[in-house]
Every structure is written in structure tokens, then in C-alpha cells.
Amino acid sequence: MSLTAALSTALSGLNTAQRGLALTANNIANAQTPGYTRKVLPQENRVVDGQGRGTRALDTERIVDDFLTHELRSQAGRLARGEVLEDVYDQIQAAVLGEPGDSSRGIDALTRRLSLSLQELSNAPESTAARLTAVGTVDDTMAGLTDIETDIQLFRGDIDREIATTVGQVNTKLRALETINRDLTRNGSPADLLDSRDRLIQELAALVEIDVEFEGTGAARIYVAGGEQLLAQHASIMTYDRAATVVADTVFGPIRVFAPGAFDPSTQTPNGGAVGHVLVSGGVRRELTAELVGDAIPDSQQRIGSPLTEGKLEGLLLARDKVLPELDDQIGELTTRLRFALNAAHNASVPVPPPSTLLGTRTDLGGFGSAPRSGSAYLSVIDTSGDTVSTIEIDLSVASAADLATQLNSDLGALGTAVIDGTGRLSIDLADSSQGLAIASGSGSIEIDVDGIPRELSFSHYFGLNDLVVDGTDNDGPAVRSDILNDVRLLSTARLEIDSGPPAEGRLGGSGDNRGALDLASSMTEKTGFAGRGGLPAADFTIGGYVGEMTGLLAARGNQAKQATSIDRAIAEDLDYRKAAQSGVNIDEELAKLLQYQQSYTTAARVMSITNELFEELLNMAR
Image 1 (spheres, rainbow, N blue to C red):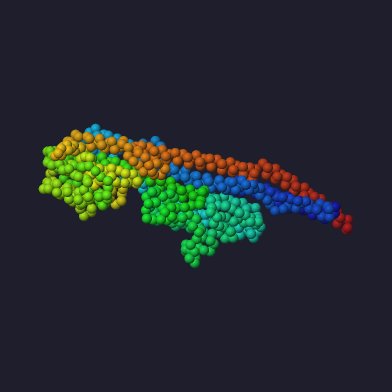
Image 2: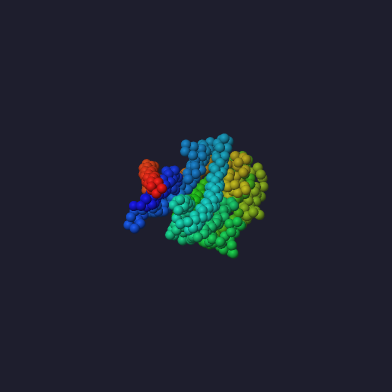
């Protein structure tokens, strides 16, 4: 071998060792860098005219298992979806069930306190303190349920804003990947660029469900679930306009994907009338209630559809459009049934002394004539000493509510008047304000349909003549009637007893009569029909029983979400460990390689030094 060939061989070894040293040092320096994959330097022998001429370093290669990378990407989406739902259930359990160890908050605590206060009222109906406690607790319970429903809508609003933020993050990742694609196309496939590409794709997969294809240059083509392209040569743009305010019937806008050039990010408007591909349709919620299905609006305009099954975005959509609306349905059903039960008991009872005026709360009296009804109710006029002045039998078989008011007005005669007032409500007034009106349900029954469940109401309950719970002011939700809040003596705890005769005679119990108070207490323990809501079937429950079913279902779903997320997290950690074992940097191995490259470098340098000395000897001999 000539000295020139020896020098060339030594120089190639020196260059290869230098690149190996630099690459190994880079591996060690990035051992803890997320997304970094171990790099190796392939080498091949140089042969000229059948003789070895040293080594040549090839392009740097990454140690990557494509299957593990794909599985980890998919698992990242499943884990992100699960983590969102786990967090949502944790927050709503705190709001609905109360914090662990806190017995003063939550739906169960509200209804338990209410039941206890009504029991205490039934034991001492003449006690002002017991009345104050009962009235205040009913009002607090209604306010508490309303607050929980309000909190649910506020939570949905927070999630809606997070959806908009997540869509923005998707666009940011796509733009970054567009830049990397361009660099890969221009510069081949540098290993560090591929690491950055894979890291961004992993982060994108955690946000939204995607499919990925790779070109020969390493550039990525990305498609969202459903097949719409998000990235090729240029990035598409995903758009979502969050709702200004969120209430139960808010119509959310769609999530769209605009092709590159079809949307102007600076003005946030489509170009040339482009409408974009609808990825997630707009609407009210994921699954429609019977009321929404039965209304005049097409279901397709109300039902939110999504092809996504994983990713943070899908978790947020599920929470906003399914989990929270279903919980709101259940709480609304509880509030409605509790109000119904309390009003049914209160309308069957009478305060002592009774009021001289009764004003109904129902204004939609047009359905009275077609409602199935039977029997008679009774109205008594009571004087200041508690004696009955007159008792009137009210025949519920008359043709209409107006006819009933006319007949009642005629029967009252000089004692008072009964009319349907300008607001459409039944009003009964006594001429002598010192006298009082007492109603007994008798055999009277008026049947109405509520959420597909037939319910029988008494005469007083149907017209709302002695409701305990009414609509609050300024849409604040149901509340105790204001006059009862101001004067707890108007709380009905007695009952009008009727001897049907003829003639019919009524007798009102005194302040110690607790039959009405017992009815109020029993309203919490008697079963009533609940409509199917949010996974709970239509069935008969007590108030406490429904609360137990609702909170139990919520807790079970929360535990299920936690367990599923725990499993997904364990799988992700296992995949990450396996990927790190194959693609990660082992410091010990890299240090061993570092020694090898150092020795190779030293050897090559020594060969060059010896070759140089030989050249000098030859030059000296030539002189």
C-alpha cells in the first residue's frame, strides 16, 4: 500500500470517528429529551481496485419501531380522551355529591335536610320555629338545585372555551408540521427533523383522532377521523366559534375543516364563499331528549354528530354534549318531581287561619275541558272563630275552566267572587276579608300528561290555588311563594274535613292539626313517577330513592372513567417504556461507543502521524 493510500485510509477513519464521537455525544446530551430517538452512524468499507481504502460514514439513522410509534400515537388519543372525562366526573361529583367528608353540601345533603325539617314540622305544626325552618329549608333546597344546574351550564361554557382552545392548538401543530414537511422535502430526511415530526404528530394525536401516511422524503400526510385531509403540502385550517353564553338549549356551532387557501386566518373568514367540511355538526346535544325529538325543529339541526372516538377534543365534546346535559336532565327531573310532590301536598292542605283570597298559578287553562276528570272538590268559607260559614261542592265535570269559574261564582253568591282574571288564572276572593277560604280535594281528580307520564291532580293543585313552590323572579328557578316566606302562618299544615252530606259540610282543624304537615313530610317518602333521564329508566321512586339512584349512577360512571383512564395510562406507559428500550438512549452503551470511537480516532491519528513521518523521511532522502 502506498503512503498516499495509507494517508487516505487513516483520514477516512479519522473523519468517521469524528462523526461518531459527535453523534454519540449528541445522544448522551439528549438522553432525557422528550421525543428524542437514538441515532446510529452506519459505516461501510471503501474498496479501490480490490484493496481496502478505509471506511465511509453513511447518513445518520434513527432507531425507531414504526409499530410501537403507531400504537403509542393511538394510545395517546385514548388516554387524552379518558383524562378529560375523568377530570369532568371528578368536578361534577364534587358539585353534585359534595366534597368527601362534607355532609353539608350536595344533592343528598339538601334532600335529607328537607325531609328532616318537614318531619319536625309534622311533630310541632303550631311551632313558629318549626315553620320557619321548614319554609327556609324548602327554599334553600330549590335554590341549591337551581345553583347546581347553573353550575353545570357554567361548566359547559368552560368546556366550550376549551374546545375552541384545542382547535387552535390543532392548527398550531399543523402549521409546525407543514414547516417540517417543507424542510424534509428540501433537505432529505435529517434524523432530528424526523424526531420533531414524530413528536408533533404524537402531540396532535393526543388532541384529535388522526391517520398518518409518510412520503419517501419523510413528509407526513395527515387525515382526521372520517378521512378529511388536514396536512399534505400545506396545512388545512380547523375552525370553531365558541358560544357567547351557554344554557341548556344553547345551539353550538359546527367544527369545520377548510382546505389550504380557503380560509383567511387574518380576518377569520372563508375565502370566496367557501363553507368548509363539517367535521363535527352543530346542535344542542349528542343525544336528544323526548322533548327535543317531539318539537318542531328537525332532529338533524339539534343532534351533534362527531366521527371522533378518541383525542382530547372528543373528550371535551362528550363532556359538553352528553355527560353534563344528561346530568342536568336528572337534576331537572328531580327538581320538577320534588316541586310537584310538595305542591300536591300543600294544595291538599289549608293554613290556619285560611286566606281570604286564592289566586291560581296556572295560566294554560285551555286543556281543562279535554283533560280526563271526575268527582268533586269542596270549598268552605271559614269565619274568624274557625267555624264554617258555607261549604260548596265543586263539580269538575263542567265543560271548561270558564264554566267552572262561573258556577263557583254563582255558588258563592254574596260571600265572594270567582273569575278567570286577565292573566288567565283562576281567582277566588271573599267579600269579607276577615273570613277565609279552605279547599278539600274530595273525590275530585284531573288527569294531565307530564313527560309521557299520566298524573292525577286535585282541583286546587291543577289550578295552583295553594302552591308552596312557584316560579322564582327573573328566571331564578323555583322558590317558595313570597307571601309564605314573609308570613310562615300561611304554610298549610291543617286539613279541611268534609262530610259529603247532603248537604256537604266542612270542618277545619285548628293550629294543632298536623295532617297537612304529615302530608308534606310524606311527600318525601311516597313514590311518584319519574321520567327516564340520562340513563335512569322511567320508574316510580321516592325523592330520596331517586337521589340515591342518580348519585349512585354518577359515582359508578366516575369510577368507570377513572378505571378506564388508569388502564389506558398503564398501556401508554408500557408502550412508552418499550419504545424507550428500543429507541431511547442507554448511557452505558453510548459511553462504551464513545470509548470505541476515541480509540478509532487515536488509531487513525497515529497512522496519519506515522505516515507523515515517512513522508518526511522520503523528502529528506530526496535532498
